[in-house]
Image 1 (spheres, each protein chain N blue to C red):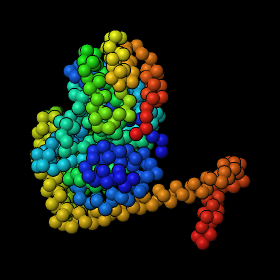
Image 2 (image 1 turned 120 degrees about the horizontal axis):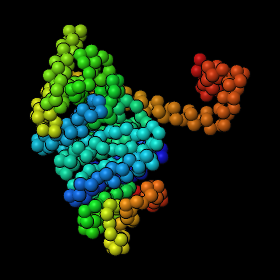
Image 3 (image 1 turned 90 degrees about the vertical axis):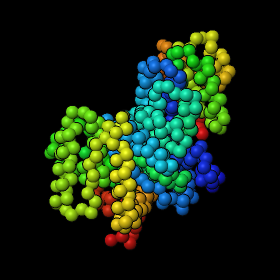
Image 4 (image 1 turned 90 degrees about the horizontal axis):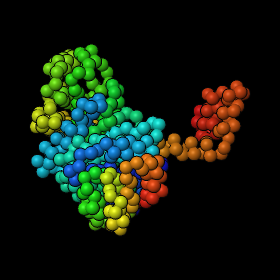
Length: 132
Length: 318
């Protein structure tokens, strides 16, 4: 039985712009992945708890309201605490270029801004996802 | 392997999630894992929630879970969504409706994709139920995919099956038909604040009366109205589940139903393994494709050929 890539797609914080997250959820599902869409207003704890229960391989975080500098590293940190350091964390939304190095240092594997070719996102995930 | 099961039985949610993954992926360790934890099963009560897409199953599941938690019971939820028959992927969008239940440490929610299995559940859902049972969940709620008229698999898996209906999707003749209407232990008319709810309630009540008329039934399925998003009617629904549970226990049906269930599941496992082993043998020698060529050209026919294959595998078989 081929293993499926399990993805959690989350919108942390109070940001309500979910069109991108929803579209990407569909795109990843079309690429053969099993995507749990968590919806809005997720705290880092909620996202990690979901990832834990669903035994996720990937956590995708979408933020268009500027909370990424806190939320994205916080999710990575909590995943580590729960011994889920192998989970691939990727982010998207409105992320200023200058914030990306910090986010990567904090453990976010990639940031996909607006206009990123969605095929690229799929390839990145497939190429970098780790087995549990 | 024993370590993982040991950790799970000691209460590790991470281990629980990992065990579920291994079994869901039909990993070769799955058989051993299930064998290890089977002795710890048999305690949980399983509630099945089924119905057409969009009737409010997920929302109702969330509310039922919360109500059970208020009685200090622990809950496991399996929420099934369909896999694409074209791409193999899935959008698992049930737990989004269970936000309140999902932040409760006494509730464990796992989404499952059907991965091509028909009938309303995923192929390994029955195994995942056992895993949650062994983990110690008092109640396990299984939410099927949005079903059509005749996906009735849940009835073989759950102790109490709740059929969720919503107004506007059919008339009295619809409610007389076979299939999902037959498997309900409880009918829940959800979205009862919408137009047509009263009519639907009446149509379903009439069906239940017809059922009683046709065959003396020991359990008459109650028909309840709910508005899940507003938490209306949920307490009554939970009470009905409780009543059904007591009925099953007091009438001895719990025991006989579980016996049937175990027989059904064990037989299914056996069929699968037998099939797998035999097909491996037959398809492994490379002659099958050559046989197909002969069949296409009418040198052989599939019926005789199959008998010949069986003869060669089981010479004693008449």
